[in-house]
Amino acid sequence: MIVIAILAILSAIVIFVLNPGRLFDNMRDIRRVTDITSIHKAINFMETWNTSMNYGDPNTIYLSLPDSNATCSSYSLPTLATGYSYSCKTIDDFRKTDGNGWMPINFEVGSSNRYLSNLPVDPVNDGSYFYSYFPGGSYELIARLKNSRANSINDGGFYADAYELGSPNRTNYTPLPKNIYISGNMDSLTSWIGFDLVENVDKYEGAASLKAIGYKNIIGRDFIKVDPSKRYRLSGCFKSVGEGGLSKVYFGYRPYDKLFREINEYMPSHLTNTKTTLTQQLNPGDNVVYLNSAINYTSGFLSIFPFEDYPEYTYTRNYYQYGAVNYDNNSLTLSAPYNGAILPIGTKVAKAHSGCGSYMYSTLSNQLIPNDWNCYSGEIYGQYVPGVSCKQFRYGTQYIKFSVLASYSQDATYSLLADDLKFELIANE
Picture 1: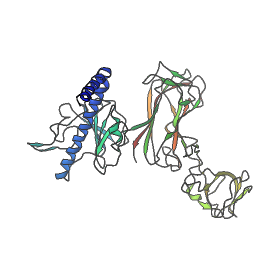
Picture 2: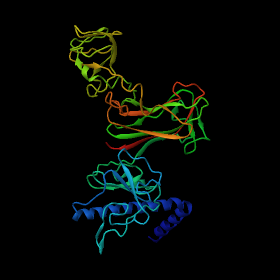
Picture 3: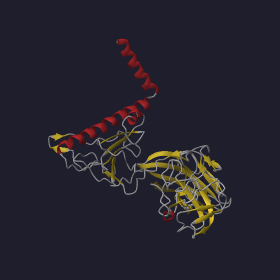
């Protein structure tokens, strides 16, 4: 036992000598977990006797950062989801426990019965490491960790690099963004198709930026997994540097299905007032399609549903161009002989609809980029509804890739720099 104890002491000394920074980081993480646990227990204690306790504004993120500005504007903080704001208290008040501190809960039960003597704050407590409290629906406490990822992995929360606790029915949701993918602060082009070089002199932040000379259809190499039921934000920083003037830019994403096939504009959308069925079997080689009704049909594309296991009238890769419409016998004449599988009577069809062009430009659409760095962002959420919004996911979308049209339809005298391209999860709804 004595030998083991001596070895343990020696090991601790060696760790401290070789990597004292990591040791201090771990100690801070331990304190963070302890602090969040203490606050969580204090809230639980308050709930036992105060059933009408005020948890705070559900559209506000309360931070442990001291600031003379009530909205924490002195700090460079992540952009919140639409409708939410930050809350900070002054250096004189931020540790108070009477509801006027950084947390809006009054922990003072009585003059001699106070569960917390003062509100804990992060041991670093700067713009990168701070405690946050979110009372949206059911409360959640968050502390970002430096090294102790085991705590964050096992807490069942939203983030992989933070310790989270909350009420038993918490929704596992926060408007604080969760970064999924970032590219641009890099020294290679391994993640991109279309950028010409890395510019190490002019950049928005980090070590480098990416450059495109002239009109380029740029696409990210990486597939990014998405859940269309959740809310995301796509953002990036751009600057025009060409002699020709300001570059016109489209910035958004390309959608892909579960088999990594790109989803074009006709596959997920149709005209609602054209839903109908086949009245005659459609065979390979047929040139005419017979419908139950051809009302509201004009020349275009015919979509055939269902496709694989997707719900009908949502996503199909089976669509065929047609020209003439015969309203007397409710038939369409195909532009080329049908070459698909045999389709029985009653198969559901509709007129395909072109929605939002080839790609989904959720952030920039034909935007003129100034000659200094400007950052742009756009939210993507929900299933695409034709004619409603291009800032939604097309039916069938399971993956996306970045898509940038740099210096759109402009010559090589126009050039664009790009940096800090991000895709973030900002809400579980």
